[in-house]
Amino acid sequence: MKVLVLLRAFFGTIFVLFIPGFAWSFMFFRKDEIDWIERIALSFGLSIALVPLTIFWLNYLFKVKINAFNCSIAIFVLIFIPIIYLLLKKTISHKE
Image: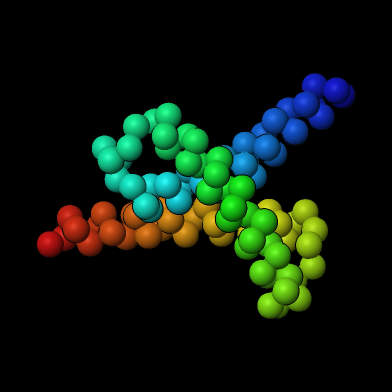
């Protein structure tokens, strides 16, 4: 049982503190513009900035309650916005 708790904490930390910033780092810098160490450090910083600000602004502007489900949805949206943008940008550039 303790292993499951540790795995949940580990993957939760990665989900909240790394993946959103990693996705957004590709929005700001191309693949060859910065190296991986800089991208990883930037990912932690962007995640620490983006996730709480998004959740607090959703609470303040739209009165969305802060709970685990709403936070997970907000983080998924933060992850998929840059992914969708980059995929659309790539498909549009290939068509031209």
